View 1 (cartoon, one colour):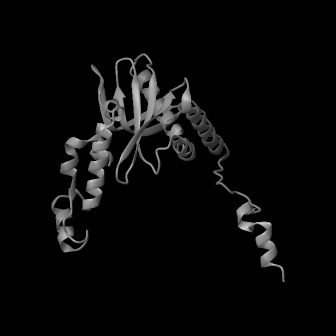
View 2 (cartoon, rainbow, N blue to C red):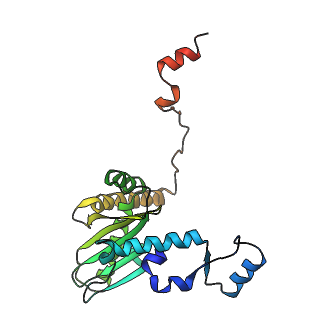
View 3 (spheres, helix red, strand yellow):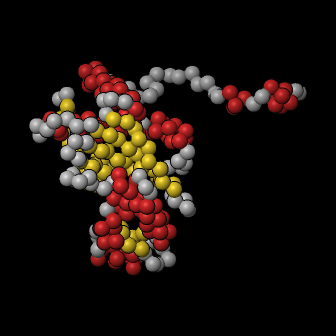
Length: 234
């Protein structure tokens, strides 16, 4: 789906529909060996990818957001590497739009629901705002390394539901170092880097439960009082 949305000019060369009954067996193996750069899709997977690409392109905000501005450039699946605080970091941006006076980070996400409250919970749960803040930090470092004046960095999510009919939504995460969810994501990133530094210094990398934990079941696991009384009356 990312290839269909972000790199439509090469999608048909890299992804083709497998017309056989199953993607296995000698015929399939021979096809893969003959053209190892091709990924063979089921008809339904190809149909979904193309439907998502068409929906994103037709969206009044998502479509223009992915295009380069006048006098600027845009890259898909852009890998950036930078040094920061004595470490080397890496990010792979779905779409980087580089204007003369503004940078735009766009991340594509397939989601269950575009309902704004559910999207807010999804972003918080999966730390998409922290991901955007990490990418923005990389862009800041690259600007400095190239002697460029820092420009505002805006972060967006272009999200889509893959079930028919494909729906698309654009969600603004804010401007790096200024406001919005990406500001909170930057604090989340700072905390993560601090934990890494502390673990490196101590030589100890604790997991989520380094010691014995007394497990407490959620309230719903006990049932209500009537259920309890009925079950254990005798």
